[in-house]
Image 1 (cartoon, one colour):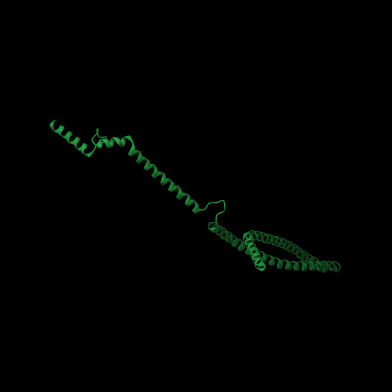
Image 2: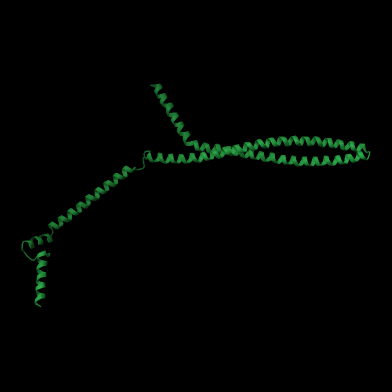
Length: 233
């Protein structure tokens, strides 16, 4: 018995957990997508920084290359002027600038690789977020439809009336109206049968007193009399 109760308890807990997960799934998905979008924004900022630094290295490399070219021209002129001391000094400066140039080239190569990687990452992440957003809209629509269906077939709340109850109320109302109408008609017939007018009509039909309303014979006699009077004139 204890094992059965424990199994039922575990089953109830599992059902509750599933219901909670179903109710919170969209909320959880919304937050996860917000976190994912924030991560993509950070990646975009990192990409923008990498591009800006690469551009700075490019400008620095152009400046170094220009300075090397200028010093080479001046060192050659110093050699032509037999000023080997100045030529050597220029050569040392050129060597230093070439080291900076090589370092700048290496930095630009690293920036290029990192920029390419970040661009792929951002593009892939944005595509996945767009796909998730489409799926989220479909899930929301499906959840709304399911809620409507569930609301249409689930039992009413304790304080709500059901459609069968409303139909039963209408049926009782119509029955009472029909009964009331029938009672009114019966009362009118009873009043007509027992009232003074009804008694006078009965007396008139038996020849006691004038008729209260004309008959077909009365109308025909009147028409004949009227016709006879017209022909004599």
